[in-house]
Image (cartoon, rainbow, N blue to C red; front, side, top):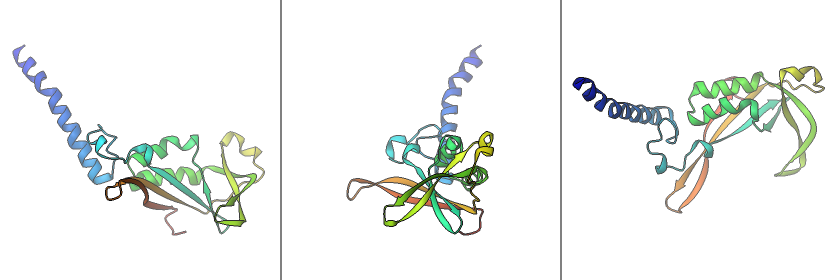
Length: 172
């Protein structure tokens, strides 16, 4: 019993050290958010998983159309925001690419070009694909992952484009 008590005394600190090492490795190697994977160092950064966001563009009929990611893409989007490896970005992009997109029938204006209107595209579930009047043929996708950082010179929080991923891997 004496040996078991001594062993148990060291198990918890050993596990904590392994978690710290794993998180440090993943933060340095895969850009894991410091708020994930154990949270060591989380208060040293403004780069939380919630402050990371995607701008997603679909290439449709020689036009680039921005879209918003909705519920169906929450899990792969969260994984790719937390750890933006090429594998995670490709998984998210592939799911968006393979989804069923339709014209919603409405248009929105480009804030920078008042005379230019673009269609609003919406995702529909497979169960409703028969209802689609205006299916969209997606030629490609561009994912932009944006992150935040603290500018210590000005004491302000800035966003910047961290990475861009095109799918299929041909440049759009």
